[in-house]
Image (tube, rainbow, N blue to C red):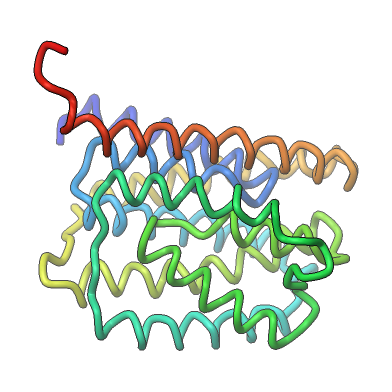
Length: 253
């Protein structure tokens, strides 16, 4: 990988970590889309996991006083159950299907009636959400949009959402890294230098976001988070659909 490409990836990681640091979401969606466009799926997934572990871990450390550990415990149980089941299959999706899944789930969640949506304060819902999120991570690389809807449906304030989701994602991406770098047949190998760049860029972007989040109100946070999720979801469904249809278009058409 050329120094120029590494520099571009680093800048993208700073920007996406900054975005995630403000909303606890969206940045991971943008980053995995970029990585899937330039790297093989297993490598993109592994590098994304390393980046997100650093970003979410650092974010959770900054806001550690606001972590709701009961929610984290339920989520981790669900993740572990899903990895155990998924390891019997070891499926790796194509880029097109990964992108379509990435955008379609948050859009579908919008049509679920409010009274039927999972709530983060309910322990059983947390286990179920952990299992669903982990399966989405192994299919699409991220579960952020689905998890965002889960947390936005509860009574947590913006700091509790950022902190608790950060810890949940730290565990989730750790499981994902093990899956794509050790369990599948064509396991990924990430260059240590690139991994170090990813971790550093993620921490810089996350650190820069703290003052912006503090300046926002909970109403502003929820309003902009919803808009960002919608916009990125529509883009990925369209892009994934284009990749899926591209092989069927005759050359020169």
